[in-house]
Image (cartoon, rainbow, N blue to C red):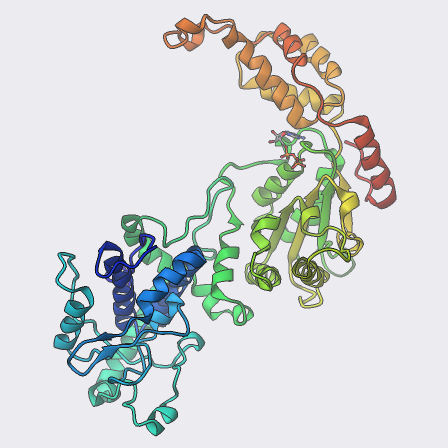
Length: 549
Ligand SMILES: Nc1ncnc2c1ncn2[C@@H]1O[C@H](COP(=O)(O)OP(=O)(O)OP(=O)(O)O)[C@@H](O)[C@H]1O
């Protein structure tokens, strides 16, 4: 299994020729380990798939410059002096080519692979490949097995027929490998079935999920020890569903993995009551998102929920908070997507990512795709913009429209923006519910202030709260939060800073209304009345009438 022969997680940068120096050894180690892993895994397509993914990540994470340096190692021909040679792949330098130890030929051919059919030959390869170095390489002879059927990515570069014509030996020409007795076949089948069963028994629907603040960690860059322990669970959980799912057949595994990493798991449970005010917006979202996802049997036909919802309004008013609440409450798979996770520097990749996003979402229905700052992804198309960004938008609109989705697909796209006027008109139409998330009114401000202060020792009474709530008119939720943070710092500021390291927390005085008066002098409303007018105007023209906070 991969855990025994896993490929190295890190390779030092190779910037200059370094024959059999540290860097050469490391590059060769990568070649060796992935080659050996692939030999061991030839009978296990699931593991091969994982190995390929890992190598893909590796490809992805290695810059062009480094790639050029690695290329030198792939291009080297290594003559083993025993009739066999490693012929470098001079066309492709993709690491995943390393998992193609097929079409093994003798000297003079250019299959880019090795023929290692005996332990002696394998040991010889190790000694020549690594020279007389002190690097320790485990050289157990890998159990080479015949692949029952090649998945697409493992298709031989030369077909058997072509091979016969060109005098070469065929892959697994060793009759021992070609022929299996009925008993051996039976044993093999049983093993495969057992493996399949163990996968299904421990299959997780979504694989490892991430939290809001957790960064995606490439499996290749993760540390070796961690990886070893997580190998098995990763194997079982990560790619099983997608591999067999028809809907992902034409999607690159790398993209599927990238999209899967955007699936979000809210560790901190949020309820609708945690959002102050915004009653009509919350009701509209619940009606359009949560209830239909919970009871699809009721919400069909005319009651069918919208495919797209737009949350627009000034910054810091709780749009993202509503997104988090949907994730927490709707019991659906929640994808939190930003423009940067979709767009790619590689032309053509962006639209593929969009396609992958919807394909993966379809596999994990019911699903909610939340796109923060959606205007940056779906801004108005114009003549001057780059072709690739136009294509991303077009693909998004097509997917949003449902031209390629089934009518019963339960995928909802929720976009949040504070620049609704910049949205492409075709995108605007597709967000059938456009909900205005306004600044909090007096009640909401009071509620929010009391909540925020409830976590802090304070000596404020109802009148104090009332006064601050009135004084903070025009503040957004985020501004109020800043105001409270600033006020909560005042008691600390009144402490002699020389004693700060010794002082007990109980000696810090509680927050008082005067602290708020001070903080009003440094924290101001972040939204101007001119901006507000624009939102109100846009809401009147295009909004779905949720403007009452
Ligand atoms: N209605 C609200 N109830 C509770 N907290 C709120 C509310 N509005 C804003 N906040 C606070 O303000 C912070 C910022 O809110 P949020 O990120 O949801 O704003 P946003 O509208 O998405 O802003 P932006 O448009 O800049 O992304 C939240 O973490 C929360 O603490």
